[in-house]
Image (cartoon, rainbow, N blue to C red):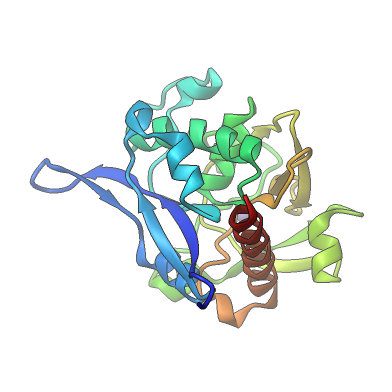
Length: 252
Ligand code: MN
């Protein structure tokens, strides 16, 4: 009997589309990124408190938190609500407890963009809602135009000396895309910075005491991930951790 496919849980967003009905959805870029690992993406509905967290974590080998156009409701980090912000309370209510439970259970966790910000908020950090309006910060928003413009490499990051990313990647710096107007303000005490933008903004994090891979990045490594070695490094490490998780579970 062959080994069963690696299962990666992907947390869904919950958006009201034009007909006013809520839909649970995941952008195809993330689904394809998981498929490129030879893994099966299992979409997790944004059920909030109704999600059986333990059972969900029991059925996946790893957990991917996607980027999204929506913002985390500022009340989760005691921030001021923004009047025009596009929020997704169902995703907040699903992702934040799931992140804490995944880390506690040793389930590999990879957060991208909104997912990276969720990791910080889940562990008690806060967000800046408009980096481009903050003195001394760069404008981290996407370059307007088509997808190639939006996802072009936009700024350098330097890896934290002695961090996981520096070790895995074997370089001190790299260029990444940047499609965010929010970012980490106060880093949660449970997290360590793994990379910084030139303006000092934290661009990658890890959970310090996590038993497994628990990493987040502010940029989008899922975008054409075959074209950048750094993206491949990240997803390969996530796959390896998920494979180890699958083996460990098989022995239980
Ligand atoms: Mn950036």
